[in-house]
Amino acid sequence: MSSVLYDTPGPKAKRRNVYYTIGFAVVFCGALAWALTIMADKGQLAADKWSPFVTDSNVWTTFLLPGLGETLKAASLSIVIALPLGALFGIGRMSDHAWVRVPVGAVVEFFRAIPVLMLMLFANQLYVSYADVDSDIRPLYAVVTGLVLYNSSVIAEIVRAGVHSLPYGQTDAAKALGMRKGQIMSYVLLPQAVTAMLPALVSQLVVILKDTALGGALLGVEDLMAAFRTVSANYGSNTIATLVVIALIYIAVNFLLTSFASWLEKWLRRSKRTTGAVVHAEELEDLGAGPNPADKA
Image 1: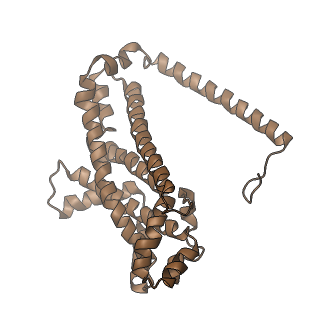
Image 2: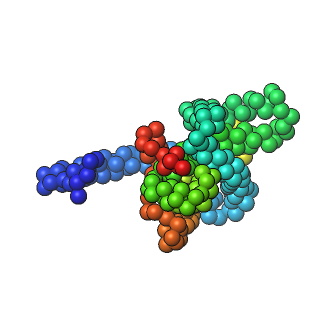
Image 3: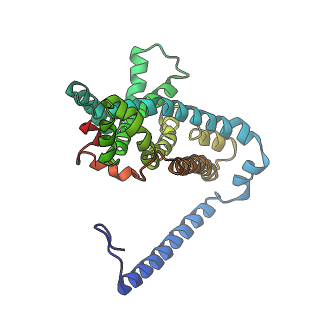
């Protein structure tokens, strides 16, 4: 089926796509074989590099599971704070009052434009210079602060996109019932927009979980990413094996998160509080165009 962004390929295009796929598969397999050969020459594929993850429970109880706990703690704190803060920012950006809309918009655009790592480093330095925070928990505070500032701004745009995706008739029907702007937003628009937000929102929650690794790599948070140094140091420099296991743990945790979100989305779509609209992450860049149904209230 053709659309504005995509034309249905013809016979020649289909053949070319098959050739491209085969070519890519050959190149990928060659690169993978080359990498495995190099790792084998360096001894990184030897059994003694991988066996501790199966034979020695201390690898898990002393290093990996505590690191996973720190990762989940940082991600959970960031999510719990960023979600309501982002919702407030998103609602503020749709306000009819310029004294609310303009400052909130400036804050959102400012923190969206700064790399999250820079926010973490800046927050860490602020805590060192101006706050009496214990050095043991300061890196965790810095990571959570950076994640909250950045992701609450992104979530604000997700909320705004979710409300934008609703049909204008929702607001018109609410106005016909005599509902005020706040009531329309609270009882009509936001409940229906939740389902539309979920794909982009879940993507952002996965980003939060992955970005906690920046704290382990650069700020000294004893999280899952930082565990690879201690595991590698205690088990014969098995760096590759440790990173592969840690990557698999991240994949498993994110898979559980997205699976739960998929179940929740299906459950919400089976209810009557949805319009079938969906907001994807790539749509957030185009939020400046188009009217806002909430502005009609």
